[in-house]
Image 1 (tube, rainbow, N blue to C red):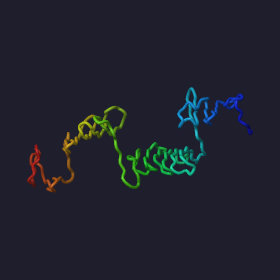
Image 2: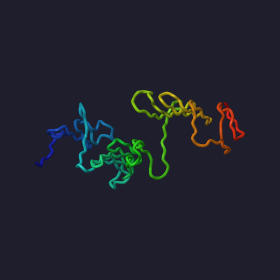
Image 3: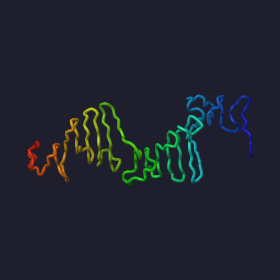
Image 4: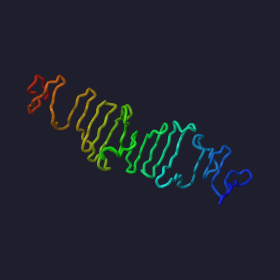
Length: 231
């Protein structure tokens, strides 16, 4: 049935029979009569509950549910969040119709990429980039701290993990395997130190282009050239 919302009392702003409140500035409170107490940029709609609280936006089985953020009525330069019930994808967009982040039904994350599932299975959990121009990623740490990327098969700390780290303090990059074992260290003067054996399947040459044809067992000399390796 059609009905008219009535406010409680002569000066009250609470809709009768509900916890909905409208203040003098037009701010809407659900479960609170003081939406104006919240920061100006966050108080047009305030939902409060003493226990769990939430909001649902429901669309049809194949529809899209959206929230848009904009500065004008022409729908340009807007930001948005949407969920597609058909593809089971959630997207975050910026500057109009540009998709910035995509989370698909398998929890694959695309940053600047609409369809992370288009990439190879073992490499598509996180796909970063753009189809044109340069692409990169930066890991920032403190001036004396370490930035790290880890690879592991379980949640046990330091168990069979592989890793790459860079120390801002020593200016060294390390590559590790099998937990805390450092396999390769790249010094700040570009010297490389290997912790284990080095197998070379291709050719080896010096920076002057001289090819190495053989190396003796103590790695003290090189045949086929005038260069000498330190033992």
